[in-house]
Image (cartoon, rainbow, N blue to C red; front, side, top):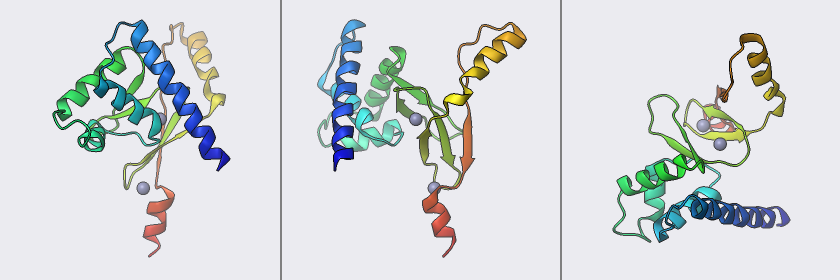
Length: 154
Ligand SMILES: [Zn+2]
Ligand SMILES: [Zn+2]
C-alpha cells in the first residue's frame, strides 16, 4: 500500500518536471503530448509507439500512430525519452529517469530496468586508456524472464 502510494507521488513529480522541461524548451504542451508523457511516466514497461497509440486512442480518436511517433520524437530531441532499438522489432520508448540498464527477455521481448552504478567508472577508464572523449555507454543483458521460464516447465 505505502509502496504504490510512493510510486504515484514520484510519477506526479516526474510528470511535472517533464512538463517544465517542455515549457523551458518552448515545446507547446498539447493535450495529446500531456497524455503521452503521462502514459510514459506511469508505465513501467517500455512501450512502442503502437502500444501508446492503443492505450490512448479512446481518448483521442483523431490521433494516429504517426502523431504518437512524431510526439515521441519531439520528446527524444529535448531529452525526455530514450528510443530503444534492439534487434529488428519496432522501437520502444523509455522515459528518462536515472541511468539504468536493461535485461531483455529473448522469448517475449519484455525489457526490465535495473541499476548497476558499479559500471559508471568504465567511462573514465575508457577515456583514460584511449584518449577518447566519452559520451555514453550501453549494455544489454539477455535471457528468459521469470514468466517465460515458468511456462517452459509445463
Ligand atoms: Zn519473457
Ligand atoms: Zn528502461
